[in-house]
Length: 65
Image 1: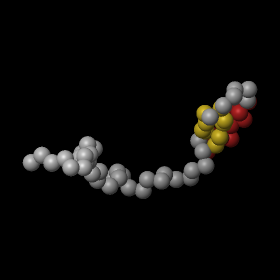
Image 2 (image 1 turned 180 degrees about the vertical axis):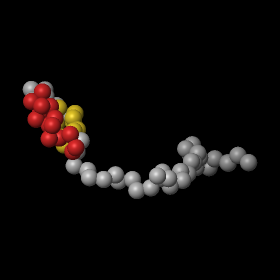
Image 3 (image 1 turned 90 degrees about the vertical axis):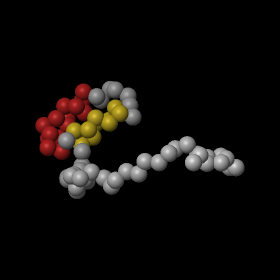
Image 4 (image 1 turned 90 degrees about the horizontal axis):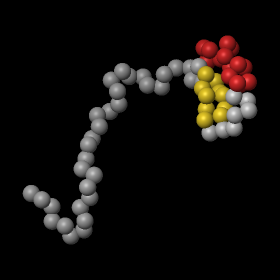
């Protein structure tokens, strides 16, 4: 499914137009964005990322020193 998302501010002007344009296209749905504010509160980004070695030791394997 492909969603064609129209921002709330432009919905009055463009929603009907795009709904008609994609009416016969299978797998496309035109929707209006319902969010009213940003979910991210801080400009700092997320928490600090912890990078770890993804290689796993096998049972009985002697770790390198």
